[in-house]
Length: 502
Image (tube, rainbow, N blue to C red):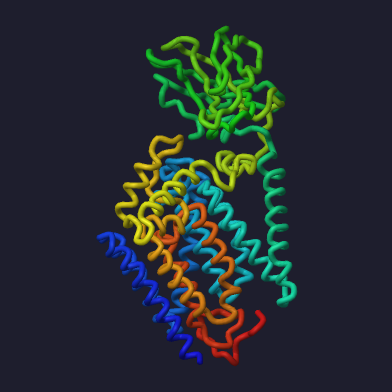
């Protein structure tokens, strides 16, 4: 009976791969055909080699080294310990896309947890990976890691089939608690949205449009006890008034914002402060004064920027500056710089739950474009290569930049390979998962949930930095020695010697 089931699984997997390849052939899509054949071959090789204990052991070590090096490199670059590499606010390393880096971190970590012998110790690395994901700014990866952690905790403490009914409720409760703690204890620790409120030398401040710009640290006592102010000397170009600004992302629709800055000058002068939504001209003299913009309302389009400008084109300023603040509300609250420096405000702003949506516009537009392509080419799709051009054409003209894929795996497969290709893909996945030996599905659950989240709001499964770890983890459990419980599937331990409870 076991042999018959194995034959049926193999037949389903082969049929699925054939269907995907036929879809590519039907649209004369050489790129899609190469991808489908290459993916199928990689799956076959991984499952075939996973039977050897040496391969299983080497695979486990490789996944561990990969996620550890990836997480450490992300943190090192993200906190500025490697300044030359920190060219962007969101860390992306060699992936070319911070969302792909976030997906790679989450996938590799949950894959390692699925195959490691001492998986409980592995999960102690969750905070490091979470901080690395925070530095990528990938909200999808953050949601995937949080959900995977909740699933692991639920499966860890919920015993027995009867208690599994409570698992979804427990997971939702854990996620809600984590969201509340994050929002109140981190995001709302201070109302200030600026990444660097008190250091004009920080890379968050942009002065590239000024003709000249210089900063002197600790130039004078600040407006409050035990504070020090910087001296800013800048000149705008003959065509502009720009001196320096700092952005905090796109403004939210109908939300009020206020920008403020403490200023002093040896010689009386005027300066313009704007929030990019409202502006004010401030008189600056020898006494400290807080310059505050009128309230401005977001429009879901304009950026939130604290912008310091000269009054006239080509004008100059010579000021002592302290306590820049950009906040939600109709009045400026007392300046607060209590957040620790290692926690990047730019990334905290991206993970502000008040700004998150299950279906944001920049995801709805490509998904709708993919469904439109699928309706026009239902059976075999448009082809992987041709679909990229179609997505670029159909997502142009909106507020978000054009994209080349659907940002949803199912919709992407429908657009590129049609119904035939989607059915084939599902057949391959089903064949692979039904081959997983007990208790592999429980061990793989956090990884599978993470992949589901990552590929519902994006498509990262087939990225070179994501796919290998996921495939190796599943392949190892398809070949785990029978009788192995929660012991390591990568050691080749005998069924009689392995623990069944972990």
